[in-house]
Length: 274
Image (cartoon, rainbow, N blue to C red; front, top):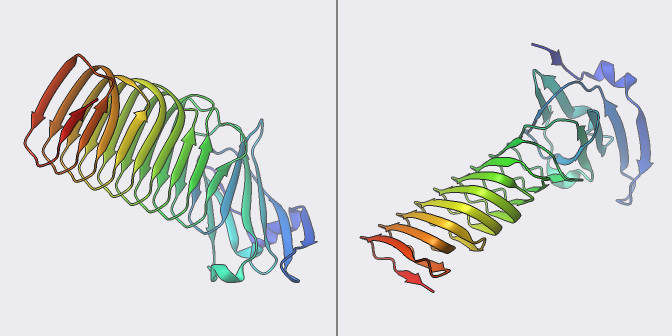
């Protein structure tokens, strides 16, 4: 297993740019960190990740001079981990960013409060996204499948998924998707986070077991399969087939006037077709 660890002694090899920020006299530094091969990015701290895809891998840390040495960028196996050795109160830090260029990306994981933002469309045949902290993610994709899960409070905004979307919400973070061109959308909601999708799909499967609301009225589906056992409301658009099993208190609204309707209702929620 290949392991690359950035230590203070190695930082002398980095290219350092110092500028005075507009926040008083705080000095902001940029350091080029040693890089290697990685396809997975894990953020365990409050640093914001600025991500772009290119023909090489590169890591640049931009932060206050007082904390830049505490930001660790370690590569173990295929994973790049961003962490802080000694976390300080965020209000005392004026700049804390890590600029990452990656040629091939397979997985992203946010465990801290730092946000993740893509700077250009990401091309990946199968991309995994895990939100376990409070950091938000704003991702633009250029096709490919997405397997996403939100276990924390961070919100996710994704565009450009083509193929299959698998989404599981176990926390309070919301998920918003746009420009979806899907064959299959499989959504599971076990938390309070809401889901809103735009685009189109052939098949839509929703399992709603908690209080999160789901709205896919702007993503027509040929076939919709719903299993609603929680208090969250579900709004969908079905053009051909709608299979609904309602055992909770959440309300279901289906547009599109599907001819094939298979309904099972045992809860207090309502089912309405428009």
